[in-house]
Image: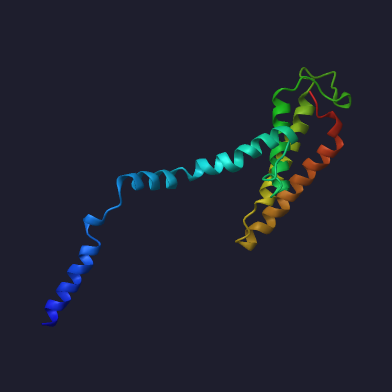
Length: 160
């Protein structure tokens, strides 16, 4: 008798979750659209206005979350672009004996760019293994300080 009651209860539960109780087709489409376009909604609602703010002001509120990392990216990228389009050099770096007059300036721009890339790596460093990161941190810090010193020294020459 008990087995018959359990069978009846199990059949009732199966009936509840049977294929007769499926989600309507229009809800399936809605749920698919809602789940799969969340990235698009985020871009339209958050990143698009930030794109226009960045165009107008040069930064947006998203950039200020880790402003040091953002500036390292911008400065390193800008200095690399300056290096690829270099047409001159500061007068104190002029070498009359060299065929390429801007080789010293290009070297300095490379050091500045590498220094700010090291600064970005320093900001985003993974600190899991203590023995590894102490030496890496000192190396990156020295590279960043060299780049920052050159950036400070040649700041008013960063034009093309």
